[in-house]
Image (cartoon, rainbow, N blue to C red; front, top):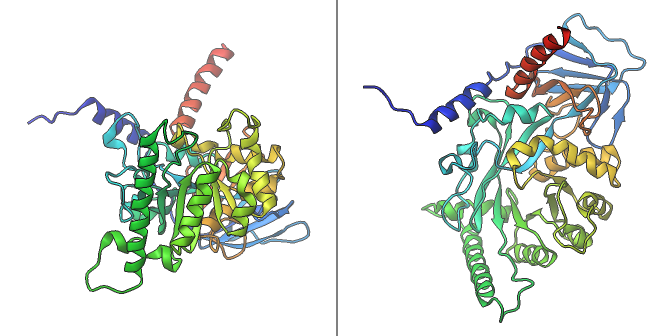
Length: 432
């Protein structure tokens, strides 16, 4: 019997066949990168560096100005005049959880129901997403894969962008619980929009009741496991972080005080457009911030049109641990532009190395993986790349080499293939 295929099935199959790449082989030989400017990701720079990778780890990062090296038994790369960076890290992303937004069946990031802490985004992560190769071509090599929807969306996990399946991709499992703070009924008055105030109070009461129940459950061991409440346990012993999606100043303050009242150990506010207004409060309370897309307009007409560009500088000076993400419209496709948003913050007050930290070491700290990634340091995973120029600049970002734990990546993708295809065609036309 002939099988019937829908148009959607054929489109998805075509996309995957164009994008699917064989994961890289394990590192089998010492790798030497000689002569590049090494941007360590912790604020330091080595102008003429030697970076050695061995067995998936960084063996050494040092100044190569006055040293002699033996390259006889190594895979040697002369990268003089180029730049080497730690792999960029994308937090709070739905990359790999959806390919075609217009088709509900392909959107695996939003589960039905209000309280879903036990829903694990990682099991829906698609390593063959056609978008992933385009993102790592710009130096983004890791991401936190995150659910959406409801009051408690679910549990996120951190992945590497080179794997056969989600089990291979997994770097840190169930690192955080994600919560959407109820929108404060502002600027509406109670008489103008009583339903808004009623909904806010109702959702707040639900959250309070759910957290109290979760906290009581976590205080004891149980013969029978409640999967929903068990997923919340890590918030109270510090093994998980609570990521709170919130926007305005009043909401941010309410959400942080609520989490502290519920005895949550690690608090991160996500989006947080008004975080710059509460920078001192966030610093005093040791609350980390994931800033939404820098390339965006202010949320108030009275604010400076470039306030989104300056938030990073304000938070940095206040001593707030922050990083950048790329949430919003065209989130997954646009996430390749993450390094350029960091470059914009450098144009508005930060140094280039301070801006680099917001997409390398800072997100690693917030995600709890800074002991192994996020900077170029001996002993850490060899997850890094070489760029022909400044990787935070759209004109300089040209990745020629990339490694994930020492595995050399294939940097081609459907877009680069089409570019090469039509470049040859028009070169031929021009020559004729």
